[in-house]
Image (cartoon, rainbow, N blue to C red; front, top):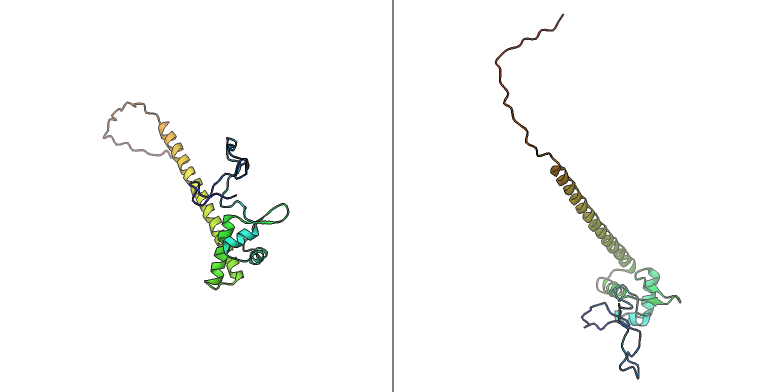
Length: 174
């Protein structure tokens, strides 16, 4: 069960226990209180192949072919049935667009998808490294501040040194 698209929760929803939900005689029954039993995200595999085909505008056999080629790899159930997520549906539409509108062959599309995934992974890694660098810089600043705070702030008496105009000649012994 997916949430209604106009729901204020966006792509997150709650799948209830089924008690009193559209069942005859279920009036007056409510869901048990507490945290949601299941949270739907963009990556949650919920669509069977026929629904995914309808949502993407493709034939189910095309979806099977794309799966064999590795263009869109849906999750599998215990019985090996395909389950597509909202992200998979989006990817199917993009593959169709690249193929039909841009005239790119399936091998080219696969390479584009691989490169896009690689870019996303690298961007994620850069973000992690920037966060680590900022953390290290903050730690360094804290340590530097601790060192400066540890300086002794005692007053040291100042004695003016008498300057002499005497000239001393040093001669080494022979």
